[in-house]
Every structure is written in C-alpha cells, then in structure tokens.
Image (tube, rainbow, N blue to C red):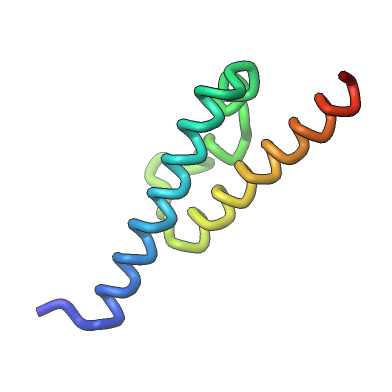
Length: 80
C-alpha cells in the first residue's frame, strides 16, 4: 500500500518533470540556438556514474532552465 506522503511526493515529481518537459519543448521550439546549448550545460551532466536525483534536484534544474530563458530574452532584447 502506498502512503499519502509517498503519493504526494510522486505527484510532485510528476508535476516538476512535466514542467521540465514542457519548458524544454518550448526552448526547443522557440529558441533552437539556446536548446543546442542545453547539451553543454553543466547542470545536465552528472558528476557520478549513477547519480541520485531527487525532487529538489529537479526543482533546481527547472529553475535553471527558467533563468536560462530569462537571461536569453534579456540579452537578445537589449541587442535588438
């Protein structure tokens, strides 16, 4: 039997993963140059062979994607 806390955690993980997927698709569609740089982003490269990824790690990654887009928009808007 799955406890309510486990259910909430799994639900939270699905939500964060869904947001990451949606944002990544948006970047791929609307900012292809930026999308190519995601492969070079140190946050996407695990430092271990079998990294443990938890909800907080995913939230930090989601926030880094949001900041990446924000920075891209700021610098490209200023540059015309």
